[in-house]
Image (tube, rainbow, N blue to C red):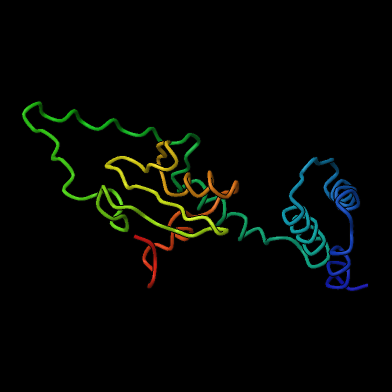
Length: 163
């Protein structure tokens, strides 16, 4: 069987069979659970055995490149930002956090399963059925019992939408 035929046959192997093939080719066991990685390693090994490995010149060049590379062994630490001078005060936000939302005090209306829902937009959240919610999605979940996008549920930004 050709190398390509052997490699194509690897696609049909189970994970356990691929691990056994890996152990046979590399002389050590593996507990890898990533099928793609395992398949590629076994296929590479089969190909290198059939067609030859890297030339000595290629190995030397790879070693040179690896020695010249700046390899990191640890994740770089994030630098702490310099403390802001005390005289600078943060500017208050000029607009609402989400431009899709109407002004506070607006009543959003939606008919859902024959019932008319009314939600009041607050400065920080939404009022519905005597409770305050942080988002329209939270209101929609309280109404439907399932998570859904609040903007879509209340038809925000669509012609003929609520408000």
